[in-house]
Image (cartoon, rainbow, N blue to C red; front, side, top):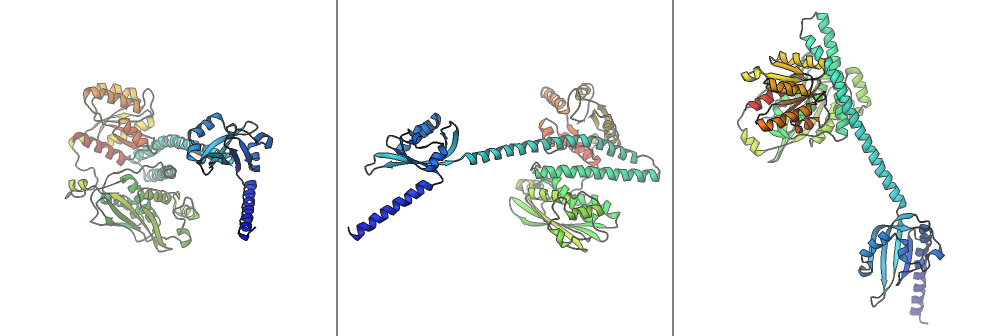
Amino acid sequence: MSNDQSYLQQALVESKEIFRIIFEHSPEAITVTDKEERIMAWNPMAEKLLGMDKTDLFNKPVHELYPIKEWERMRALNIRKTGWLSDLDTKVVRKDGRLLDVNASITVLKDNKGHIMGAIAILRDLSRQKLVEEQLVQAKLAAEEANTSKSVFLAKMSHEVRTPMNAVIGMLELTLDTELTDEQRDNLKVAKDAADNLLSLINDILDLSRAQAGKVVIEEVEINVADIVKNVCKALMVIARHKNIDVVWEIDPKIPRLMIGDPVRLRQVLINIINNAVKFTHKGQVQVKVKVESFTAKDCIIKFDVVDQGIGIPPKNLATIFDVFTEAHNTTARRFGGTGLGLAICKKLVEMMKGTLSVTSVDGQGSTFSFSIIFGVDGELLKKHAGQSSHEGGVGALPAAIKHLRILLAEDNMVNQRIALKTLEKFGWTVHAVANGKEVLDALTKQSFDVVLMDDQMPELTGIEATQAIRREEKQTGMHMPIIAMTANAMTGDREKYLAAGMDGYVSKPINRSALFEEIVGLVKKQLE
């Protein structure tokens, strides 16, 4: 025998030994079938996977390893013609009859003339993987169920807490409008401040929960950034003056008068950050600077800086200042009040408006909170309002029709009905109150009204049911009665739910007088146009 032949023979022996080792010790089950599709060879893992021994496997038709439907599915893939099949999830039948999830890869063996000699199948046990996947699915379902339960709980508690809060705050406001001694007025102001703080806490908890759950929807409507900044600053100047602090603002004249964004969320972020600046500043001023960072045909990036001369933030707390309930929050909350949730909410809202929020600070000298928001730019909108001057919100020159409105108030809670009645009458409007949706329909057939303020959760007919009945009737008459939802339901999606039901506006309880006035006036003005 020549050296070359000896070398080839040795290599052949070695390759057979390598194959035997792989075959015997493979972590996957391997079966080898002949051209008649009978099992001729297998490895130890095949015996373990299938729970069979050599007497069970030798000469066994391979189709008996699979459930009938699985074998038919594999046959339909025409493996004998294509020559191979890779990564197919299927099932095999163990000796004890139990079905096992496996991943199969099959290679058809052919001779040099293309005739089928048999096939090799590699089966990987998927039972553990399937179990983990099922556990993950169950965990996901449980988490979703828990999240749904939490949302239902929050929605219920929001309504149930806001209803009595509306009565507390409303009665305090009405009483403060009456003749009182100095001591009585001071006591009521303390109670009113406490009620406002409690409402703020409720709102913060709900807002944070909604933001973390991704339930906050960012609106895209016409927005006047300059007006919002001015109005927020002017409102907070009242608080600042009590501390002998100035609130000043500087607004870039290049900011478009109208853009596309969410005015409610922008106002919420500004109020929170500027209010914090006022709270933690004892002398000097709070500066609000607003400028254009970039401007394209489709969007405009506006940067907001709120600079205070307050107590500053220690370097060790800067990294966690936007986290929920950190030690920094706990310390300042004990000294200055607050929930420790405001900045966490602001960060979430700014990010949802495609922006970023950051802070720089020198301990004992002051802080600067900066955030940028991307607003949409509508070319047609800019042309439409080109040259128009910015206006301040106000209640000055109102048309005569709005000064003498006739309002139908639907409210089943007698305390809240009394508060709303007196609040509306202070605006000079005539109000007729009813206690349920059925009485709303009866009143509209007997009297003429300019607007309906509709609670939702009422006996007889709910606010939504009454609204839908009114809209059905209007399809015949061609008329349209302005309807505003006035409800303690204040979760994300509630406003959209009432608008989809046919209402024209929405205010949440506890009622904010200014917000209620603006909603009514804005809706009636639109109706008169």
